[in-house]
Amino acid sequence: MEISADRDGGAVIARANGRIDSSNSREFHSSLEAVIDEDDSAVVLDFEDVSYISSAGMRVILLTAKGLQSSGMKFALCSMNDSIREVFKISGFDKIIQIHGSQSDALAAVSA
Amino acid sequence: MTESPQKHKILVVDDEPDLEPLMLQRMRRYIRTGVYEFVFAHDGVEALEALEADAGIDMVLSDINMPKMDGLTLLDRIPDVSPDIRAVIISAYGDMKNIRIAMNRGAFDFVTKPVDFDDLKFTIDRTLQHIREWKEALSARDKLVVLQNELNVASMMQQSILPNKFARNDDYKLFGTMQPARNVGGDFFDVIGLSDDRVGLAIADVSGKGVPAALFMMSSRTLLKGAAMRTDGPGEALTEVNDVLNEDNDACMFVTMIYAVYDPATGVLTYADGGHDPPLVIHADGTSTQLPVTDGLALGVLPGFDFLQHSYELSPGDTVILYTDGVTEAINAEEEQLGLARLREAFEADPPGDAEDAGHRVIDLVNEFAGDVPQFDDTTCLVLRREN
Image 1 (cartoon, rainbow over the protein chains, first blue to last red):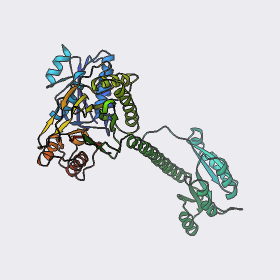
Image 2 (image 1 turned 60 degrees about the vertical axis):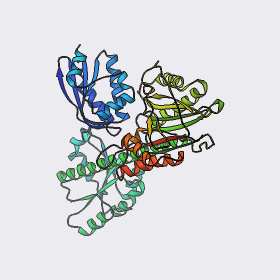
Image 3 (image 1 turned 90 degrees about the vertical axis):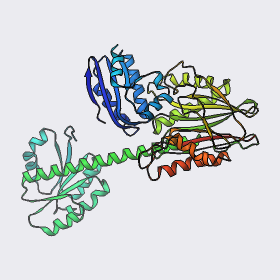
Image 4 (image 1 turned 30 degrees about the vertical axis):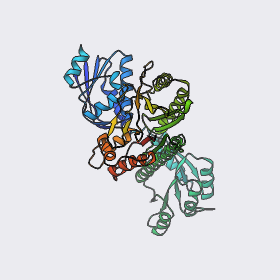
């Protein structure tokens, strides 16, 4: 899976795409790790082009959140479709990872 | 594919004494850089002995006419030592008859005398390239077999922990079923007998697939059984299971779960969600109620999380459906999800009269909706129907 990355201030904005499930979650994980630099102060993962995420993909989000937390970097998710937003709500993941409606809101939150 | 240069051992078989020094001289550059290593034999019998003694020989380069055992007989015998060795024969120029026999006996290629060493080098490299690809294919196949065996173990573990006999009494009836995905997911359900005729009902979905999911499923299920019997209610039980699952969970595996306790004396269902879709109650008239979430969190994610619980009093004829996302996220050919609304509609038109019937109908609904589209997730439901 290709993850494109832009930088805004100290934050890296990573954009995933398509379905994230057990068939590509490993690749999703390594691609996501590859776009994050040690110097980044925050990571915003944009779900605009993601259509579906399974529990294997959620596990990667959790691993990333814990990894970033231990290295003192902020982490936010944004621009999810309704069904993915629902998955994060039902699973309770939105209690431990911040989720924003838009990329600009997410950037503002992690830059604050 | 990039790889570091691999050393290949080649057995040269010829009864004429001049080939060995010539070979070593003309190929000295490749021998020195470690690309080739040559060993020599002087007839077919010696060649077979050398192959038997050294499993590291990849390739045989053999003359045809030799004492004791000729090259054509040797070709026949090589597969008995190892089917992965490839042979190239050296024939007299224009000896099409023997070349044809050699090729029919499985020779990979041939070169002719007098030996053109540039052509020989090319032929050897082509043969070795083939051998490398062949070995890679074999290794990929072996890995696949191992993986398949592991998945079979995971699937057996998953099936073995599911209850298959369900209470059917005057107060309530139960039924649970799981349709496994082809690549072994991590769903399970459980029915736990509790004091005072109460019964504990659990449905769960472990993150990921395969053996890791199956192992995590086993420990989640065992922990829940223990916690269910020790604790007073579902919220407390999930709190306990979550704390234990969070110990040493560097892999960040997690499980979403509903754990509910039904008390037939009062008809009250008390439940807690561990980041899982809440129970759906289908009433006798076909209307339905999705019970409110208890604002939980997937288990294994955050230690010390306090799980809450809600209670709901079932009326006689109410059917509670616990399900995993394999049901609501089933996909059809148009890539639409089944969704909760379709599930509710299906029962609205024709309310369930029986727990087992309702369970089968959930699975049938998924299968009809999905059609030929392969499903990536287990499809699981656990049904409770209050009779009186």
